[in-house]
Image (cartoon, rainbow, N blue to C red; front, side, top):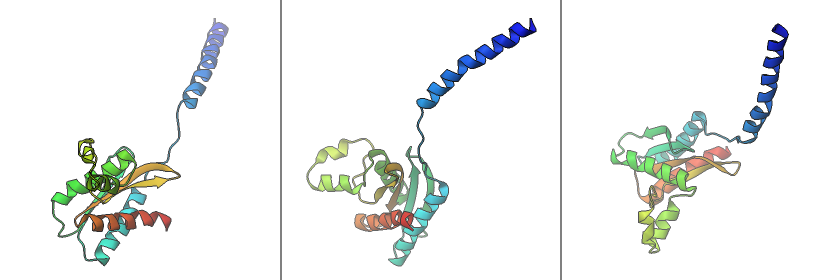
Amino acid sequence: MITFTKAFLVSCFLMLIPVSMQLQAQTIEKKALSLELGKKIAARAEAEAKKNNWTMVIAVVDDGGNLIYLERMDGTQIGSIEVAMAKAKSANNFKRPTKAFEDALVGGRMAVLKLPGAMPLEGGIPIIIEGKVVGAIGVSGGMSSQDGEVAKAGIEAMDK
């Protein structure tokens, strides 16, 4: 009886190996944005804002559009919190800078206003690692071009 039970358990285990291998073949590995890198990007963006005497809100989201880091510089208007997060989510979810939506709108493409979650204001830029979007930065507090300049500075922190 014990030999039969052992043989049965071994055969059950061996049957599970192909299932495990199939499941592994169906999954993918991906890069993820760390809190450490998010803070590094935000710190570089903040330095750019301070250099120009601008007060900004800086939001960093992961590849799901979930907030992982937010910084509101002293004196920045409260309304910029939601705007910065919306810019970051838009850049992440559409895998392009929010300036693309602003440019389309300026060019007369009013349909941009109907895209769910599209923020047609400069200041949101995807964070790309090895060709894949792993998150985004969104900046708000100044004019759109200033927000864009600060967001771009944050992205450049990845090169250093």
